[in-house]
Image (cartoon, rainbow, N blue to C red; front, side, top):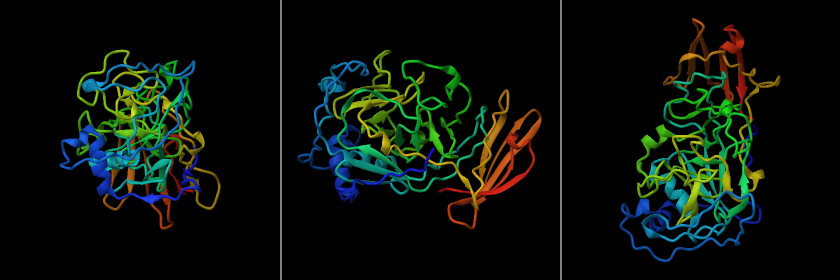
Length: 376
């Protein structure tokens, strides 16, 4: 996986985001914010977009009345006009993550920036470890389309499909690259195979933390927690909600399409989390530029010589896996397997963007290996 290389279009200058007018505009748009904001809502500036048509192979989109009697756009139509930049920024600030997650916009994208490293517990409870650990990835930027429209067919990516409002990437349920969304393979289900922690995240091939299912620990910490809260955004510009409709009513069996999305009266489409597979966004229903999808490169050894040794999965799983963070910033992940305790300890190096490792994991046979590894 490669380091993100997201940059605004050279033909459009970016504008820094002023949260105050954004929150006012967003309060006019998002039902979750209306009750909390005492503002007079004027006309909302729309983001123009071209019409799209639905072709064979597209995810099922049933035009039906939405919650509260709202009528929905027909299949393949663009999202309802709204200031998407304001909506993305408001979803971050209202959740309480505005101090650590940035949002800026140009005429095409909202760019959500963070370091992929949440404040909640990480890695605890994993049984199917691959001996990779969460290392911050400064400069990770997620591009969210401002004028979303339904694509002719779903898109899958061997990388993140979206981003949570705390700046952590969101992947599909699988651990093995791009998938066929019409075929469920339990062998690659990260939740079923014990690869996810108690918060439904883990560290991937780039030693980067990300979610593969509903980000439950983040959701519990959100200031606006509840069914109306937006949990994140797909890169196609459509929002992600929890297990129920924004008005709190349950989602009927079969109501979500293959990507775990359904029509939405405000945004055109929306994604949902679910207790059963696929748990969260499985594919993207909207148009995207796959070349803009952010990726995190694996750590590289200081001075050359490749990256961290490839992790191995201890057969039969591990017990009591925990990640402990000390006040000095050092981190240690420990677990038990076959009656032996293994560990990976790492701390910031004196070299920027680098970490000093002491690895006594199953992958090294429990033998100490030291090295300094850096983000590109």
